[in-house]
Image (cartoon, rainbow, N blue to C red; front, top):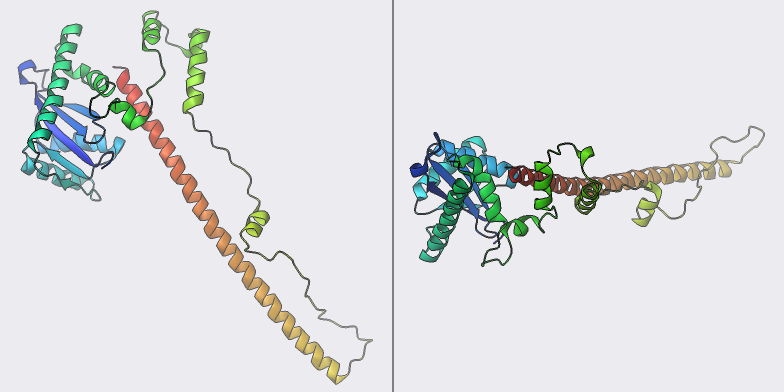
Length: 303
């Protein structure tokens, strides 16, 4: 079992506190990390649910198994709708929940609902869709008994070192430009960026040394070239002429072998170089994915 192996999907009924056209909350949770996502919905139509799930999958990846509380037929229709947008998507309809899992899921749905009600009271605002992202962030940043650390840390590593109180003070002071930040805040930002940035150093590739270390080229180069033109002043006997022809044939064979070895060496180097480039590309993709996820959660935090 691992991250995004099994995704739990459920609905929270908000019709008693209707926010305009929004009546439902689509609540999804990763079974392994307990990391949650939530989306406001106008209806429980399959198309609406699939659109929200695709939005999540394109940011975090698709799960292998999608399940919901006693709604296997509905999940099957959602998976079918998802595949109309992504034909390469392979998701299994999860099995029915046991009583213990069902109780756990209901507990988490209640936590989300009660926390959202608290947000409504504190902000004196019935437009709960505006506070949904903030509420989910607070839940993901709270420790759970089952994994001992926060879901946020389980997915992204240690929490951000930003001082939330400090940023709230800056906000009340109407500081909006980076150049207007106090120097101690700038120093903290630089320290954080140095910890999170991935610095890539590229060294010039020495082709000769690389090939030599791979034993793809001979360590010693011998000059086996024989003269092809003899001075007209030198008279050769028939025996010497035959010997010369034999040596010329040998030389041509040697040159042909050397050319073939060089060609094989170049092919081998090209294969190694392509493998290296693929590895670097995969590492770069992982870095970009991490930064995108960080930007996504930074955006959520602004609400």
